[in-house]
Image (cartoon, rainbow, N blue to C red; front, side):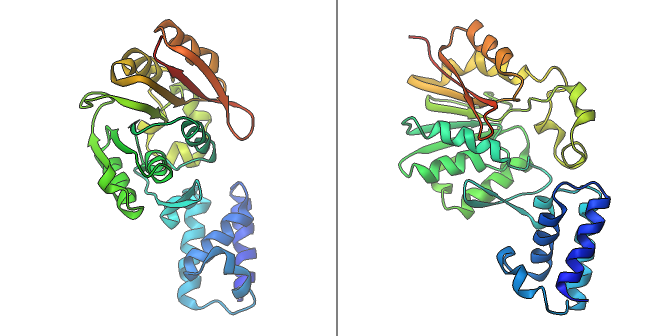
Amino acid sequence: MTAAEAMVAAMARLRAAGVPDPARDARLLLAHAARVDAARVTLIAPEDIAPDIAERYDHLVSLRAVRVPVSQLVGARDFYGRRFEISREVLDPRPETESLVEAALSFPFDRVLDLGLGSGCIIVTLLLERPQATGLGVDISEAACLQASANAILHEVADRLDIQRSDWFETVEGRFDLIVSNPPYLAASEMKHVQPELRDHEPRLALTDEADGLSAYRLIAAEAQGYLSAEGRVMVEMGWRQASDVKAIFTAQGWGDIAILPDLDGRDRILCASKPG
């Protein structure tokens, strides 16, 4: 069997399993099994597939067919043009979260706090884009803190990033020019409707507050002003249908200059707010 034939067979299996974009996933998994760059898959397509590669590929495709995310199978995910190591202990970075990074980079900051940092993709990216900045990242999950530390080392920002296990602001001290967060925003009632990749293979703690999906915003809105510098801002990602609820929460806490910003698909995704004047 050639690599191309193996890929066609894998596409059919993934399509039958209801996997979105089976062609892309079949290509990425073949590249990982063959230990080549995904861009080189077409070059090896006419060649016979070696038995050890075929065995690895079959195993990967079988796992993807039961909806294990590709990022967990290959151990990495691209985010804002960089490769981040990923495990099932952290949320798989999504393209819409890049909108949070874009929004944050439109303002000056020297000191940044990431609440619930997960893989570390947000704060590591911000520090890479602002070489003078330093940061603190916190997460209640020890496994997430370890994964974020690995990514900080990988991208050579570990000397500018302190990572702590903390239940939101519990261990946080000091003031920050920017506070960012992509908190769990799915309501418990929504969990049965999400894709199997999320529901069955990503950390539930990072997805839902087991309530109405708004608990983290209430906490951040109530407490974040005490950790911001005079000109500081808070920016949070939210579900695309939550904008009015999240804005109301921040308005009730007296925040100033509250703005709702879209993601790349034009959906309400980011809330930005400053301390009241």
